[in-house]
Image 1 (cartoon, one colour):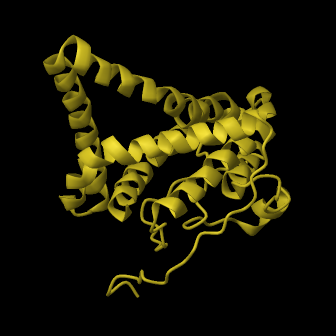
Image 2 (cartoon, rainbow, N blue to C red):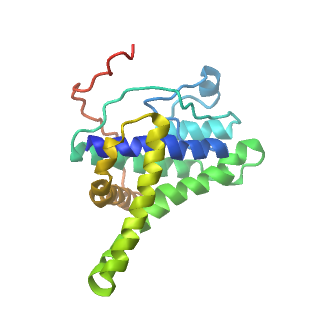
Length: 235
């Protein structure tokens, strides 16, 4: 589980956040590795309790208030990730639900004008596309691929799946190179695509169902084991 999350984090920080930074519409300042100007936080009213994704909520608020949010590639932080499937599900369920809450709360950013409206014009559609719409419908692609393997052309479907996996491996290798990470984690990537990715899809679908049915989700604290320490020589 840790290796799968490691791949996800390295790719997310080195590819996704670089893209958002280039476009000037960073959607989230991560709670584990974020820094804020005090004046900026006070201007937008501090950390709100309106959503379960307070980091995304305040980031969007800062954009709308005209502040610039940037990605710092040299920032370093150590955090303890979920160590069990249950803990991972609970964390990602809260993140997905909270992100949708933040997007709905700031839906009027779509009509914001001027520089402060950049997030609404560019960032909001991208977040909805990549974090909500695509993951919800992505399982259909896997179903069609499996159907093609069984009932249509096994070889062609397998080659198509391997081609997609190859592209993802190249992107992951590039992200690991940027972060000077060891490539051995990439050996877990095929299994990550078969199991971990499907779980993340189910988590998002669960969150969407909760939101659409009017369900309420309370804060779910991650259980800390204290087994993870900072690497030697980082002080």
